[in-house]
Amino acid sequence: MSLNFCDVLIWGSDLSGIIAGTLLAKRGLNVLVLDDEAEYIRTPNLLTGLGSRAFKSLLSKLMIPESKLQAIQENETSYQILLPKNRVDISTHRPLLMKEMNREFPEHRTLIEELFQEVDRLREAHLDEISSYLPFVGGLHDKEKNAFIKWFKEFPDEKLRDIWNRLPHEIKFFIESRIFFLTAVPLMEMNPPVLQLLYFLPPEVGSTYSIKNGGGERELKKVFFERLDYFGGMIHPLRNDTIEFLHKGQELRGIQLGRFSFPTRCRYVIGNLSIKSLYKDLPTPLLSMLNRTKKKVAELSPRGIRRVIQYHTEKEFLPEPLKENSVYVSDLQKPLEGVNYLEMNQTPLNKDLKAEDNFDTLLTVSLFQTLSEYNEEAPPPPLSTETLEVIDSKLEKLFPFIKGHIKRIFPAPPSTESDPELFPQKTDETPEEIQWVYPSSIFFPTVSSPYKNMFVAGPNILDWLGMDGKILTATRVVELIWESEQKLTNKDGKARLFQKK
Image (cartoon, rainbow, N blue to C red; front, side, top):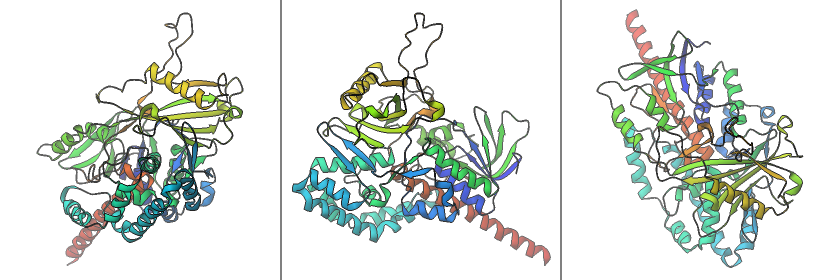
């Protein structure tokens, strides 16, 4: 396979599109992935959703051997919630999780059990049907949306809503923080978040995983890249290359990469990056629905961004009960955002990255920062010095013996050089290290596009479902492309039969 032609061109590096490409390559299509992700990204060494039925089924479909997953380790405890006066270990094992919650809320034991029983009942009866609708295709397939709305109006969730309304705020907080932690995006604006409760309260989707030598999701993507290569696909690092799309009418015919003198022709395109970046760079043919879609995308206002702060520290000065992943909440009554809700991930420093002063652990702190304004032409403002100092002080208060044994490496503290202008220290994030978060929606973005042969995957479709959302998106895109292939095959077969006659 070369860069001259492919059946399926995947623009971007989100896991959903990579999964779709691997499934299509297994079916015999030539797949080219334009990988726009940097080799090293400052993200937690954390994976979620790998214990779900959907992910296990995916591994089986792609015949990925267990030897390829040896670097992925399941954490004994999913994560911890650290409060000012106590901590709660969140286990994937239902009896242990119930034990922890009963210890914290003994007076609400019966109500908690009712909640889990009702969620289990609804999940068993209706989850497969819900998943069959998702994600929505859009365009000419709006009848699916209408059918779902009609079906969901009759959804038997009265008992679940009654239980939810009787839950105290503290228990709702634990459940909502679980969903937030596993999806990395704020909850859907539903009360209660019925769909997310069905997907995320069952124990098998609550597991967390780490990569032995670090790397997080990037290392998981490499597993699928290797399988894509095995099936005859190709991964091309995009780096900072420019892309110009070649189109005719309502079809994309290929791309022109700035580094090459020849075009890359294709039959299908999968847009696999941020929805705003995708539609901003697409050409707009005359008399096209693309203008309407572009306008709808442009009107999306982000709820905020996820950002990371990283430290080097020494393992021996961290509390022994501290797990690989933890969430520090200062005030249960405040929203899950800003310095009130800090996700922490600790992982051993790679031998090649070990620093001075006996540092042996990389501590990554993630937070969700709300922003009231967003200029898509400019990067978001860096974290303020005040915010960074608050986080630094919270860590020293949380880990009292760590003072003097921790060093913030990103964003780096201001230079102490006598003439800092000669060697300025970069302290702000690069775009690859920031995840814009848009309001979660069931119906938008859709996997269809105004172009007949282009489909949309990427980080903004079903983000509220975490890993299951990526798998559902990939599966739907594969179905649509394969459906188109079957129509072409039948059409060509009929044409040849007519010619023989």
